[in-house]
Amino acid sequence: MSTTVPLLAARDLVKAHGPTEALRGASLDLRAGEILAVTGASGSGKSTLLHCLAGIVRPDEGSVSYAGEQLHTLPEKRLSELRRTDFGVVFQFGQLIPELTALDNVALPLMLAGAARKDAQVRAQEWLERFGVLGQEALRPGEMSGGQAQRTALARALVTDPKVVFADEPTGALDSLASEQVMTALTHTAGERGTAVLLITHDAQVAAYADREVALSDGIVVPQEVAA
Ligand SMILES: Nc1ncnc2c1ncn2[C@@H]1O[C@H](COP(=O)(O)OP(=O)(O)OP(=O)(O)O)[C@@H](O)[C@H]1O
Ligand SMILES: [Mg+2]
Image (tube, rainbow, N blue to C red; front, side, top):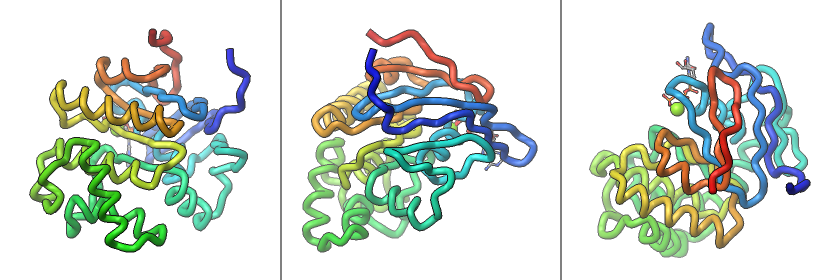
């Protein structure tokens, strides 16, 4: 058993959306470099948990600590800085910028971090290729298939070399062969760079790529058997 302090630790998170209690005391640790799968029924609170962990949504109660900082108490300015520098997020419903091509969607986080457009595009191109988006760099999100949009969103989440990638159903629109290709690229990249990945998935084959799996049930985290 490792005694290393987790990179990200959530304790007793409670979050309500109006009358719906999406999280009711969820606790979870993510260690540096670890790939953790989070499964659970639709509506069990997975996306809400991801949003709290990534500093996008503030929990009503409970704490989230990341590398020594208490995310639930940080000012918005510091949270958005962390989201830019340390986190990469793949949202369940894509959220690519509709006016930008695939290439510019992926280049954008680098440009926001100060890279010149040409340099950002060269790196964006490499990441699109890594995720199997070839010859579609000029498509805008409205012209992409669901799978192309998901691959583009993954490339965008990884292009800045974040410490943690939060991926909400990143293979939900992919068939099993494409899921395998994307998961191989994701786990290879994470292993190479020591990136921690929090991976939400409904798919047992996708969860099998993780080092560890937990499930959400009615807003509470339940450990699962350790993957081989
Ligand atoms: N913005 C919101 N406004 C109102 N209710 C919400 C909102 N977001 C989530 N909920 C509710 O909170 C509960 C948990 O939602 P959440 O999206 O976290 O579930 P999930 O496990 O990600 O589900 P799925 O597998 O379908 O994506 C659900 O009952 C959902 O209807
Ligand atoms: Mg969800």
